[in-house]
Length: 184
View 1 (cartoon, rainbow, N blue to C red):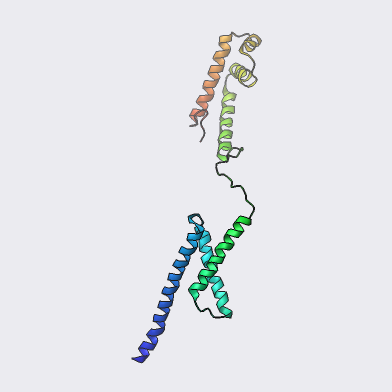
View 2: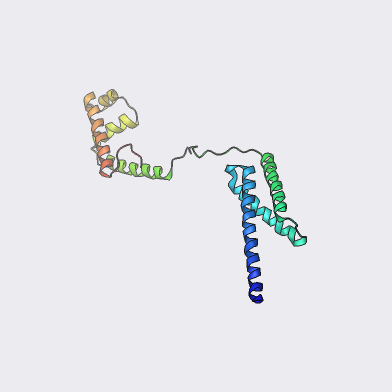
């Protein structure tokens, strides 16, 4: 019977010590968290962990009479150190995720390239007169009156060629499932 008590005693002592350690850890987290604030939870856990490391290092060379008092004193000092470091650190501006990069995204570049390829193919199959009128009017910015005079067309014919060219280009994009001007 004494052997059973002797074997059970160390297990009970270990369970009691583990329970006390768990209670101390919870109390330290609450203590540190109350001093740091809600936004610094990760720093609070780091401080509690550092407290235990310092306890371990200290106990390797000398005994600790009151582990709880020791841990709270160390944690309090670590919290003070944390605030000292933070106030001494040079302030850096936080980068806003909403800042837009002036360069287009990769998806946009690929979409534009695909559209250009479709439009170039559509321009190649377009009637020569329609293509020339459209390019001179839209890309070169030549006035419709000038194009009409150069090519011997009426102003209405120049406008009609431009309208039909735009319709051809839109149809080419729509056949590929890309509405004109839309982005992916």
